Amino acid sequence: MAYGQEFAWVDKYYKDKSFPYVNAVFGALPSQTKYKTELDKILNEGFISMITGDKPMTYFDEMVEKWKKAGGDQLTMEANELYVKQTAK
Image 1 (cartoon, rainbow, N blue to C red):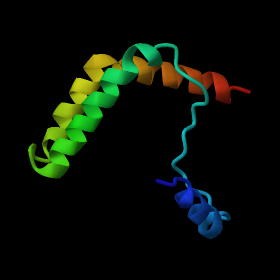
Image 2 (tube, rainbow, N blue to C red):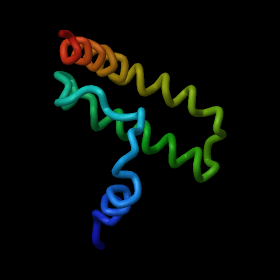
Image 3 (cartoon, rainbow, N blue to C red):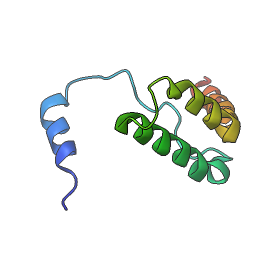
Image 4 (cartoon, helix red, strand yellow):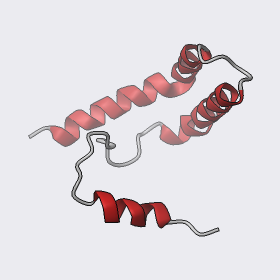
């Protein structure tokens, strides 16, 4: 399977566009290795369950709460702190 075509397409058609949704935090977060695997699992399983109809779309809020309790709140706090440091002038 070849990867990269989507980047060529975006580069060709959207090179001059500025999209507002970009990752504003550069670098790894201090607790990322501790929580990332479990947090990714929660999101992947949750989204797949909603897409396949195993869970209703209202499950989203419950999924977010699970994500936050499993370390998402910690990573959010670290990302906010890092963002402040990176944007301080």
